[in-house]
Image 1 (spheres, rainbow, N blue to C red):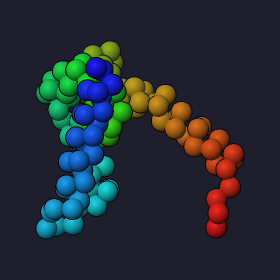
Image 2 (spheres, one colour):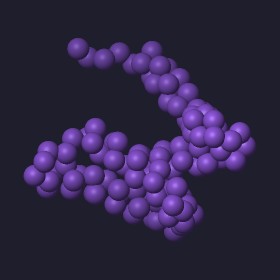
Image 3 (cartoon, rainbow, N blue to C red):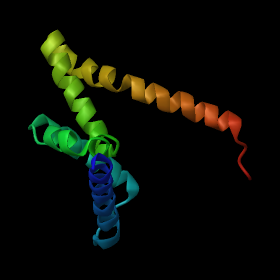
Length: 118
């Protein structure tokens, strides 16, 4: 059942993004969606509304862009609790650093392993 919940929630995020890009009179680009979803995840996390969705949907809520915003917000909140006001700047980066480093390393390894057809 957890896989189904994750699929539904992650799929709904994708549907919302696609509808925003297709149906708005102002042309919403993928960059707008990226910034909006990360910011939305951070705001929903800051007001306490995103964690219940994470608890219910698991990876369906943590893997999409909104999950990255949630991770940054939770890291900033934890940083403030540990280090005071300066922790707001370092906490989010510290919380997300492992995922970002993994993306860079695996992206580099994939670039070494495969040659583009150009």
